Length: 189
Image (cartoon, rainbow, N blue to C red; front, side, top):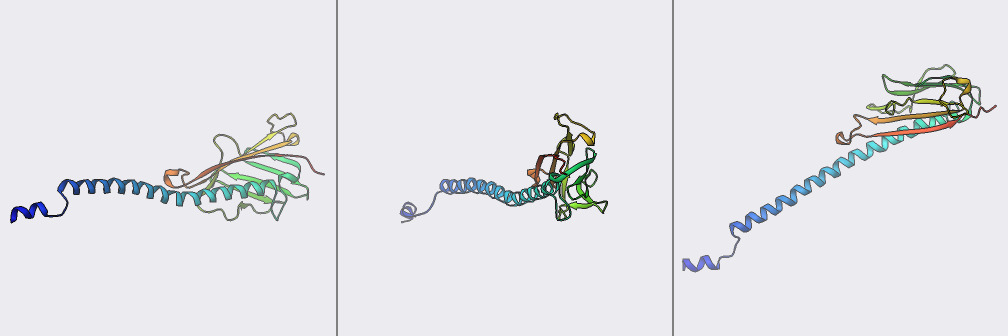
């Protein structure tokens, strides 16, 4: 009777159990990598959106202006043209200065000699504005599209910078994004 019991017993053999455990392990490992990918992107994408929003706000303030002063689109004269600073007179007669602080890595605006205000005003801590490689923030061109340092001959201003959160590396769940635009100086009267 003991002999028949072994043949009619229902259950799994050791090999079947080992195979089930191995297959479950392979599926679990691929699931872990998928979850890490999804978690990393759920943190990375909001950081990327914040970086892009900050860069767009800076570009919009420089080109179009803010409630305090009109921007580069309404320039009547460029008075100082530096690699990290731009001073111009807008159509409302206001002197506007955009400057990049290379130590704190922020861009600020000053209107009519007033205090410098960081743009955007809500710049989160851990977010930095940097040069895009070795390219200066402001590059100036004359009527012949030749780079110039003479403020009176400036006919176009190229703005180029990069916004970075934290290290900017995807592996650190951070982001960076380059921004560039060019504005014709039409010298509105």
